[in-house]
Length: 236
Ligand SMILES: Nc1ncnc2c1ncn2[C@@H]1O[C@H](COP(=O)(O)OP(=O)(O)OP(=O)(O)O)[C@@H](O)[C@H]1O
Ligand SMILES: [Mg+2]
Image 1 (tube, rainbow, N blue to C red):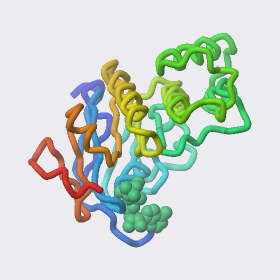
Image 2 (image 1 turned 60 degrees about the vertical axis):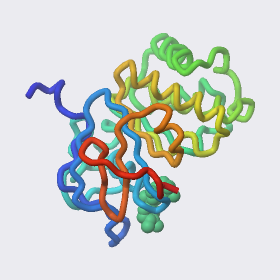
Image 3 (image 1 turned 45 degrees about the vertical axis):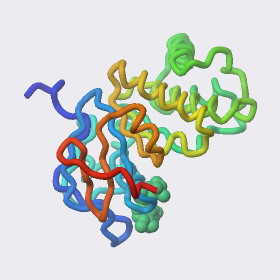
Image 4 (image 1 turned 90 degrees about the horizontal axis):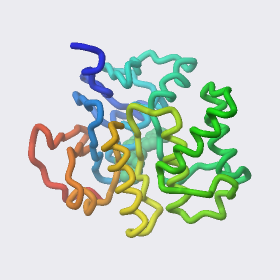
């Protein structure tokens, strides 16, 4: 198999723990390059724990996981910045720096991830803001933007390093339905251009409206719509 055919996420017989409690076990899931995957399940079922493990925030103690070519088990803290350059992360609460404007927020990430050339940084910044449908916001402070616009800035930030996959943990959780749909459509658009997306959500209207593969955290296991049929009810 050539490198380009390798899944962007490969989970092999993994167990996800929080402290000494097993949250999810016997996980075997591959996510292919360019795939869109919903992650659903009741509150407390393990969605965020799984995502945190995938982006290197929760250590993997049992099993193997490969993300964008990195082995997550045994990942050293010094490797994490390199992993993070291959992936993008979007949370529910926007986590921008509120004392810096949009441009400074994005520059901060570029500097932290090794960008040096000022002209390239400037053009990349304009590119990602265009990509998320934001024009002239680079000198605005986050509080001068609506929630939906702030989330677009976060998505722009996640796109800076052309990630192979976006991990989105309830990215529309704090937004009203109309704005949420715009954000959902933006993720689909980004996905169309080749970036894989795994999105944790409680919004089953999205799944009906924009069908895609669904992983469901259920009773300590993961159900995969690729392998079996299951009810989407009981997600809340
Ligand atoms: N930092 C933590 N320390 C200890 N236990 C935790 C921690 N975070 C989560 N847990 C526990 O792990 C389990 C899974 O939680 P997780 O946050 O992954 O669920 P979730 O599916 O993301 O829920 P939600 O839909 O509410 O976001 C829960 O029992 C939770 O109490
Ligand atoms: Mg969660």
